[in-house]
View 1 (cartoon, rainbow, N blue to C red):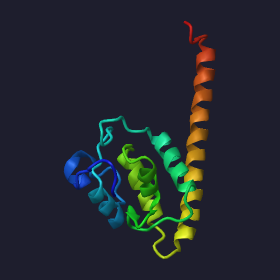
View 2 (cartoon, rainbow, N blue to C red; view 1 turned 90 degrees about the vertical axis):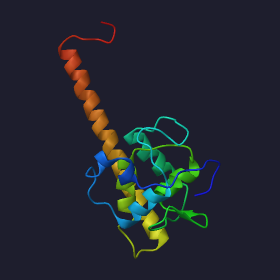
View 3 (tube, one colour; view 1 turned 120 degrees about the vertical axis):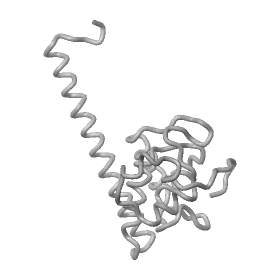
View 4 (tube, one colour; view 1 turned 180 degrees about the vertical axis):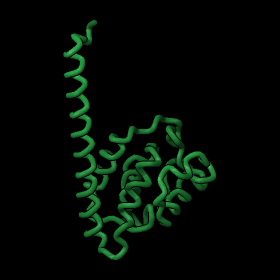
Length: 158
């Protein structure tokens, strides 16, 4: 990945040993991407705060929608990218949680034999499904919170 910043090459597992078992289905290509970029838990390359879980999915979805094909097994190659590579191509200094990176790369790389266009369609549909499910869960939680606060007579001004 080329850009305005110099990112260290490191292995995620060496940097954050306490997270080794957090997502057990790590594909070989996800490990390669971790070796290509240095992920900071909670901090971007320039010390900016990382996006939240839901916001990261939405930004990756936006980046994927802007393309018409996705690579398998590599962050980028000759202007083409995988789903996470699309996000970093649009926002090279941004940081997203490693859990998001691993979930999306595992899904992106679960179709090794399909065409880049077909992979794009599948990943885009899955990202739409995931973001919609997150939105519905958030709305359900907010509705429960509103009903609970109303039941106890609590308002925001109390």
